[in-house]
Length: 377
Image 1 (spheres, helix red, strand yellow):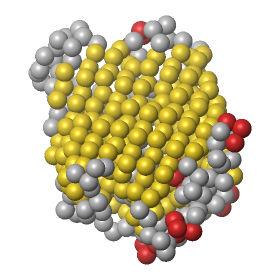
Image 2 (cartoon, one colour):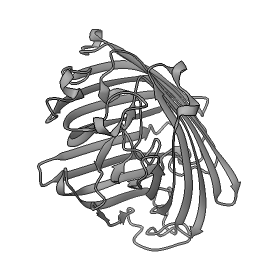
Image 3 (tube, helix red, strand yellow):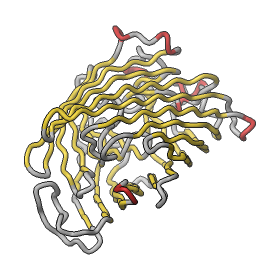
Image 4 (cartoon, one colour):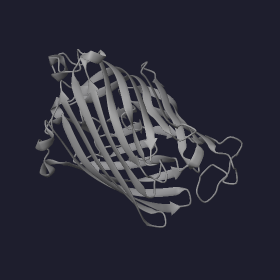
């Protein structure tokens, strides 16, 4: 299985064909800093005092569901006061089967460092797969469909006491599911097939103490997000989603780092299958197709050991344990899924933005490969 993904829950293009491949090239422009090589970074001259960096990754791929396709992935990164880094990342691809995907995600600190804005804009017309709901869905339930989805997420947080952020958020999603078999699960009209529009408002609370947002060596990141989707706000479905994301980073010695994440996702109400908690993808339980297992509750524990190899080249070994269930108290560690793997990182600017290549294995008994930008967590 080959997967090209730029951050989970944003742009995803997948294929289960081993014959699929990707050609990736790195273009880096950093203001007037020019091209160079140093002990930390592949392409940037550290002698420059410039604080703005632009990374572009051209991609090309082939898959049975997509035919030939290509596009660009990249980001613009700039330093704010007290050395905090803001960014605007994005991806755009197109295939010969007239499939397309666009994703833009800003993460911006205001100049006075009192406010933080984040979110995404996502537009997809792309193939996907569905295996039903639950931890024990067999491979025979696999069905292919085409998803036309549009999503806008806006988050605003006020920075309190330097490391605490609190704020509000709003999201609008529109999903149109088509080209699915007429005799399988999606044809039964499960939640999210006929209902297309979901809109929600919510709150979020964050503790952010990492010394770097993109490749932290120490610190903590804790985030709680509550979103209520209601017909009061124009949604076609009423449901609630709570996400708890807890991350710790430990500097063992020099550039050797151990990263640990606990992620819990819970929903209540009539949840569309597209927004159900799930495992799989480039960020959560690498080794599984994103959405291979989904239900109303999900929890996983992931660990990753990151180590230096040579100058701008890093390595990593990772593993994860996760489960889905209809209710949070029905999660069972003895029935959890296991995934593990290794990868390399290529640092492309002094802000520590990395190109990531991971190879992962799970009880699917096949390798999954991931090309993306920035870390899984």
